[in-house]
Amino acid sequence: KISAIKYARENNVPFFGICLGMQLATVEFSRNVLGLEGAHSAELDPATPYPIIDLLPEQKDIEDLGGTLRLGLYPCSIKEGTLAQDVYGKAEIEERHRHRYEFNNDYREQLEANGMVISGTSPDGRLVEMVEIPTNDFFIACQFHPEFLSRPNRPHPIFKSFIEASLKYQQNK
Image (spheres, helix red, strand yellow):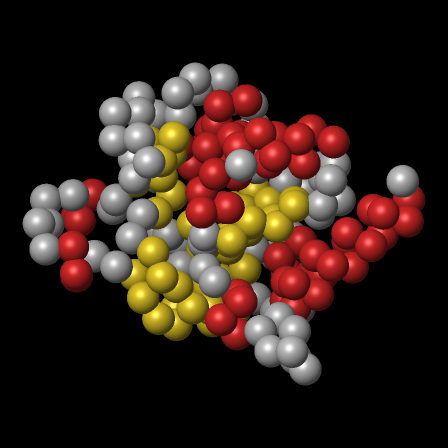
């Protein structure tokens, strides 16, 4: 999966990552752009020297994991001038979540300084909800699950935009 993400990033192939897809997009970027060899998710590699994805600090000592799952509908603030804003057409959205691990803000400045844009966050700015690479035509990933709000007769805007970008990519090959 990480190799496929790297290929998409390096070759400007449309990419859309959901949940683990966003997590691995930040891991791939950390490894191959930031040079953080061994970067990973603490969920997949608890011994990683660079836990790009980790439990929130206040959750690390909780033994009953039932209370640590981020589950349900949560608001997300979209950064102005981003692909995410183009996709949604608004500054505030609500999306459904089902995950325990989050992006580790210790690496936030490094990612942003090297070209990955954090385009969606929780309203308080603390939790990373969406990332993108603006130098690519379509490279976006989200922590939430937009498929939960998509319907056959009413596709979610991010799926629609990804399909449009993929068709355009195919036509221009």
